[in-house]
Image (cartoon, rainbow, N blue to C red):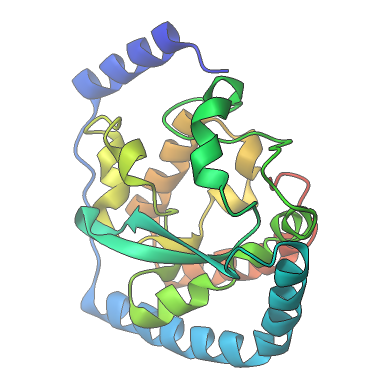
Length: 227
């Protein structure tokens, strides 16, 4: 559980002392990044299509009423809204049940996560553990709403609670993976998560992106930190 007084104090310190983050993105980097996004997302969708069909089959077998894909409004670059795709890993009425579980939140800051979330289905536990549930976001990458590498796209309700310092996460296109995914994921507190994202935004280049893509592949299947 988060400690509101401690968090609010840390937020005030950030607001007073932080300097606005500056990104020096060259045209070469942005164009190259987009080309890599398009090529890799197309290749990924084609190669993973058999896996997509198998996962879709098991999702429908366990819960015939719910859809295969879960579409959720997220915020992208400069706060623009888009629908992010995931394989559905929870019961069909998961969003309606969220309010009754808020007191069990195990993550600090404006995000909500429970390690043993009762809304998660059996197939959902597996695809979350292996991060397979995130793979439909290759469609978002192909559409240009996301990139392969970048800060994870937040929910609108989460961003409403952001300080100006934390809002800098929205200064670049969000991604499938970033430092957070390869550095502990759900075991990392929100403040450290923000610092890792801002570190990426400040330092990002093609070499870092490629390293993070390969690092993500290494930890993709069976990460003990995913839930």
